Length: 251
Image (cartoon, rainbow, N blue to C red):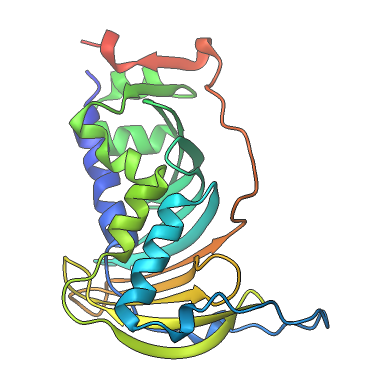
């Protein structure tokens, strides 16, 4: 028997690590614009109060047409990685790596698909028969299933924004820097689940978050995420029917 609850719990843990840990600035994200192009006009976000900057970034991410989110994190000696392209709230596609096992995620509307290696399925179902059934296939499930919340969280810009950029307590101003040749202003805050977080927000165009690095409740809980390719269209399509195993039909 396939155990979708167990599988999705693993995603939920990775989501909590990567998307809601906390944050501190990392100098390696600073870049230089050597293009010689004229400086874009300010969007005014840098003149706002720190809490207003964070609010503007959260709303911009939630309302964006598309974004590419890529990064990694660590917890309890394990490394997690994320590489997802998200179509606003409509769906997304990409890869989450858990315990060194890359897992492909697709979501089209209210339907999610998961494809992992045999090692992944054996690790997270503990069932050899399920592993054989799912090898080379996509596990299909409805996002209405409460156990799928971890999957939806990776493929919905609104849920990403809430998980990443909702503060508990005071928000303070950090430094100014360039991220991917975009001028940004940073704000530091404490997420709802603790830790610390600093997000760098574009000061030109829409106030999109450009970079987030995190530290959690313990020193070994860290993560860093880059946000690129805003509003660049891409397609997400369901896998071929012969490669799909539907959880609704499994016993």
